[in-house]
Length: 451
Image (cartoon, rainbow, N blue to C red; front, side, top):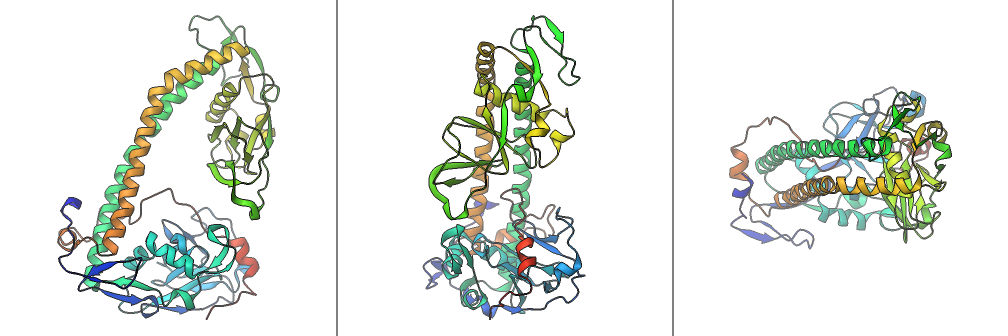
């Protein structure tokens, strides 16, 4: 299906450096001829609060895991009606747009638009997320700071005059139909590959768990640990609380004015999330995420800044660093404590967990054995992860080529059903919430509304 796509026979210059040539029968329209800003505010705050997410668009705030916000705090939020388009003005360059399916409320700092009769929302949302158009949105944004770390907003007076490619409406529908179909196929493929990664991780974790709880000698004499999840342990090992095997400390707040300007990685539950001009800890070190899954444990060789959403080992107490890393990985997989499984886990939640601790020399042997037996699994995980990355990159490239008229989809899309088995127009990453409702609530009454 995708292999059959070909360039259009007749092209013309669009006059836009970021767009290049477009099909001869396409138009280029300014956004303000397709969308008209509206600004209706709630007086009671009793309407449904909606959350704007990168992949899912507008969803119910509570259903998306948001906290309950009292109605009085939502007074002056913007009302959005079904079919209207919303733009996060601070994240427009990242493609944060959505279309409402129900009536509700959005942040007063967002822009809400009523589509003109000739506007087709699904196509426009795809166009607004083009990487090439993101640079235009960023250049037209105003505010404090520069780049992604600045407080820049894309106001309607600058958003409206921006030109976008505009195929005939019937062709826009065909473009969206093909992208929906391809999105569904992409989602299935990525889910299948993620299942493979999950199985490989389970095998690797079994290797780690066996090594750090039973050692390498299958004939070693065992003794009861007294701990149900740990079971019997080798006789020569000490059974002690985690706080006597390693010390953990919470990370540090990161000054916003120094982000992304230094060589030192900032580490949190998501791995390296930023860089900083300074560091707090000399590497190598071990970092563990505090929020969400406590499976997020990282070994880092460089000097680093542990973010406040993480814990890091301050004292290995004479134990091998890599052994401590694998022990924390094993602990995070075990449900020995209700505290260890909840979001917001802190060091005191972990300190009373009981470990079986071998001698330092045996720890080195255990680490070496884990690495040897995990090597092929690690390679397989890396290989499948790269496949997912390539699939995502192909998806991004396909969207750009189709939406900007570099590939003709009319014949291919016309043969597809109107309703696909799985409609997934933008399957690229796990979805992340992008609202900052705390700021929005504080700014609701004194926000300047753009013209």
